[in-house]
Image (cartoon, rainbow, N blue to C red):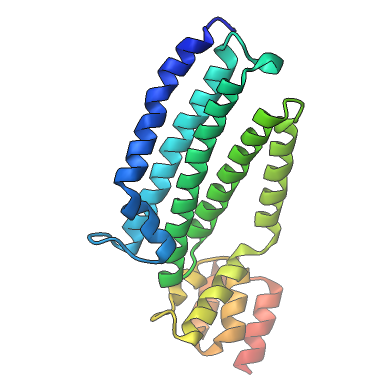
Length: 239
């Protein structure tokens, strides 16, 4: 598939890089405000974080597509890849990593203000995974023998295993309860915690037993989603 002259590729990709440079310069205050914890005027925390994620998602897809296509069709590629093509690929990765960092900063602001939810945890996990992938691409440009597919699989498996076995619902509930008790969270969304798995409800019962009443217990029991451990803890507190 290596049919495209490298000079044509450079000519096609260079305008994209200039667009990114102009975009970041013109929107510097918008992007950098997240690192300083300052919410731009006219934005809510939710809109600011949501917009940052979708900007990241679109740019990541575009840049990943450009990197893959240019490296596949370039006449001089593979082991013979010239330094210029490596620099172009690394530059696209760096722009993407910068955008990921800004999107993460926006999400951190959102979490600091309103606490954690399942969606915020999964979104943050996905953004970190994207950052890892683009770092691996940079390493691949420097060391050709680097097995990027192997290490991408390893990192994904480890991160997915961590997400699955870290009891995220319990961590979400514990974090929100601690924020509420410290005064950083104005209101504790107990209904959201009660709708999550038993892990989250266990944390609520342990930390705030007065917020879990008999009605909540019957609801979970009737829906067959209460564990024996949950039943025992609720029984202990009710006694």
